[in-house]
Image 1 (cartoon, one colour):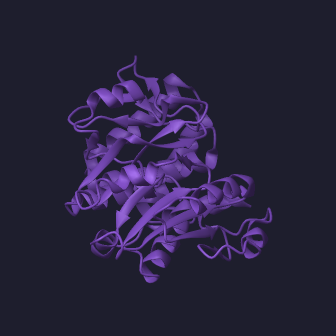
Image 2: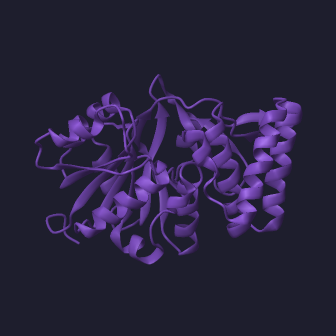
Length: 305
């Protein structure tokens, strides 16, 4: 589709981070090529809704939800909203990331070649380090540094890999093919499931290594374990760990099979028994796995009270 005929909407999901949101919206409002910015406010209590209501920018539209649906629910809502408003491409991002100037242009250089693609997500305080480690295609190697990403790129791309939902572009055609993110996941695993679903549908997926989103560090993702043979995504947040354990088991059973799911269970038990001993985390994991097997996606709500 010629550039003057297609519409691009940015979708931002936010919750109680109004200062970060204000900074991001300023960047997006000044980004050429964007037709509109749609902000999904997950029932914030810090004045976000009021700020959005008084913004007065034609290209920025806010919608405040009645309750906090997490990133999964927010992107489910926002992506549906963008498609309803006629977007042909949707640029998805959290409120705590900031795309570099020119990030969208670098992504759009691959329009027509790809269906689901995005930038690298680097540490705001150390832009040569990835916030979300990347497992390189064709093996088990996980990299944390931009130098390794650049070395592995082919024609500026890492094919088959993307970090949703941090500055990724998705085509309307792909959304119509695979549907919307799983709102019931709340957080952690919804983005990965969407990528797996896209992959299963034959989507063309890639990371554009010259395009960057700056993001705060999120802690000890990719913590070494088992004598350095593998890594584990540890988080200090019980809410995040519960959702990760529950949703990851669902994803692995659906897309990898029983053996992959059992391997994840064993890995988690090893990590919190030997690498970072925490019996409370083991109990939390067991409860999350029980809920996953039951198809119960309400357990995270107790962490929100």
